[in-house]
Image 1 (cartoon, helix red, strand yellow):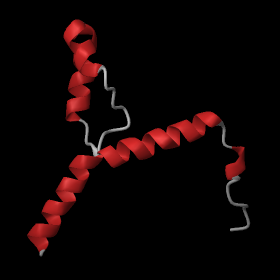
Image 2: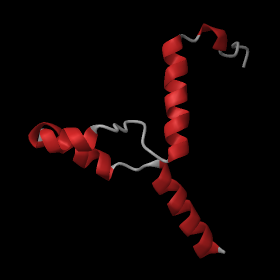
Image 3: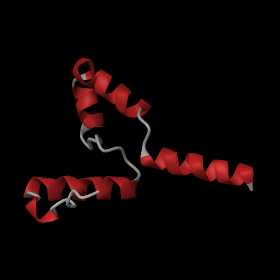
Image 4: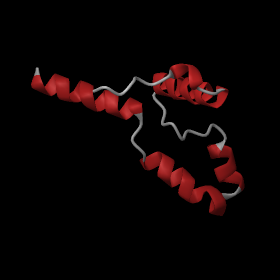
Length: 77
């Protein structure tokens, strides 16, 4: 209770970049580990990027959460 709040002025440029990336990807409904080049890399090197592609397809994205919440809201209403 007596501990001071966080000092936001001590953030580095890297922290601001991460925050911007998180806000942008959340607004687009994509997961934080989204890679726009992954489909191309997956076609060029299927053995190397196959697991990463599979993992991204199976990940829960903010878009999926919003859709599930909307469905739940419709079913409860």
